[in-house]
Length: 261
Image (cartoon, rainbow, N blue to C red; front, top):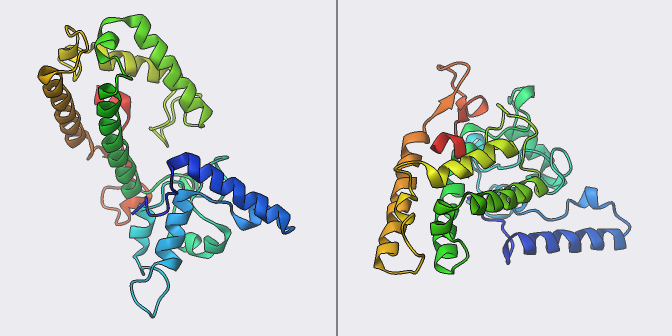
């Protein structure tokens, strides 16, 4: 459900739409912050709470508070916690406040437990398919990454720079958001991913890189290994009170590169 509001052409289309809406707001003498720009996750929240109809009597799909909270990837308004990502337009501010009512102050910008599960599943699924597609296209030299520390360091540096530019890199370990790795943690995890004995890429170390049936089988072995790791770790969580009814407000999925190694 969290993908309902995604724009054509992915994040590039999303950024262009937001820029166009901001420009239109200024041309009408309005403050772009009051209009809200365009963000795929905020558009999802608008669709399921106002635009899509489960009945003619109520706006939106009339979903439960917990279901809506599970779909919220960035639980804040524009500019509140991140310069480019948010989940609520001004027009849905009251509904958002109702959905997030009861969240502890320290977790105001933290996802619900169910939203963490959703994001983790989403990250794994598109990462697995992207890796396979990029490898088949010749864009990721997996065999070289298993053999060369210099190649691993070069690619890791690119990944770290990309996450830093998107505000997804932590200056220090963040217990509230374990998906925000430090640069050192990410570099170490990336290196271990390709060098760990019996790891998912072990079979690539002796291959030239040409695609054949052996490589196709190895790719599927990798996919199966990732899914096994997900099954082993997806239930890992911390909770301050095991008997608490609203676990979505306090629970954490333990996930990230380091948890898979």
